[in-house]
Length: 101
Image 1 (cartoon, helix red, strand yellow):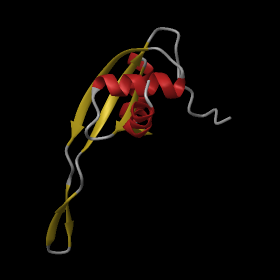
Image 2 (tube, rainbow, N blue to C red; image 1 turned 180 degrees about the vertical axis):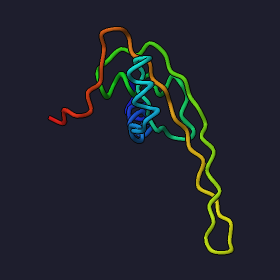
Image 3 (tube, rainbow, N blue to C red; image 1 turned 30 degrees about the vertical axis):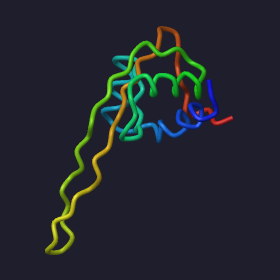
């Protein structure tokens, strides 16, 4: 893998998405939810997760999340739209975010 591709993979994953829904999905479907770059593709997300966490990925689903409209006084503003990826791991694989070391 070239240096350019490796740098791109490090920029694809932004953060794990921690929410009630993400926790429910993780328990029920053995999936992990990540916030990803808005131009990320499924193969890029799969390669990035496998490289960073040293696990085998079974499948990836991606969803575009529309930004909410918010009010700033009289002015209507809008939050940025973003993309999230539901990563399904192979049976027996897991990512533990709590173990930092």
